[in-house]
Length: 120
Image 1 (cartoon, helix red, strand yellow):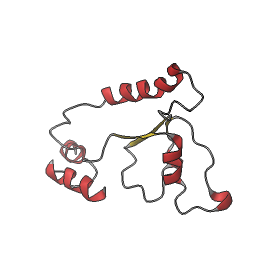
Image 2 (cartoon, helix red, strand yellow):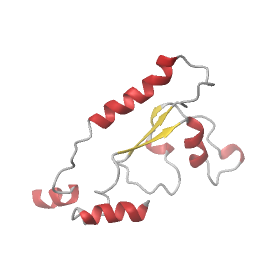
Image 3 (cartoon, helix red, strand yellow):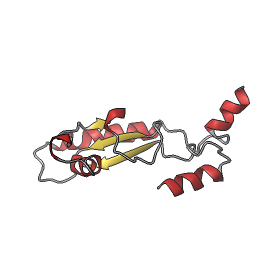
Image 4 (cartoon, one colour):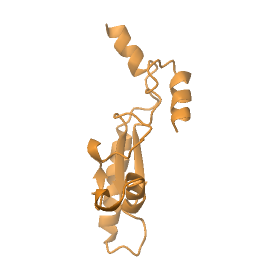
């Protein structure tokens, strides 16, 4: 993922290596995110619970390849076996769609690092 982000950044003229990072990364189900979050942890150091929605900066997996500007969002499982109503199951995905709609596309012609340099 780091190599892809670097290539995406270079392709738009970025010099900081982060401008090609995704705006957000979403996980479909808490378990998928917790497996990544707990990689390398043992016993009581394991995280036992995460909330649905945007994850706080202190709950980012070790070795996470993206910058802090990339939001991590955990949605509920799409499995019909989970004890939720259809509305409860759909709500996190509607929130995700709303956040994604707020991401400007196409991205700005000038990468963030170049805009900062130009403003100085």
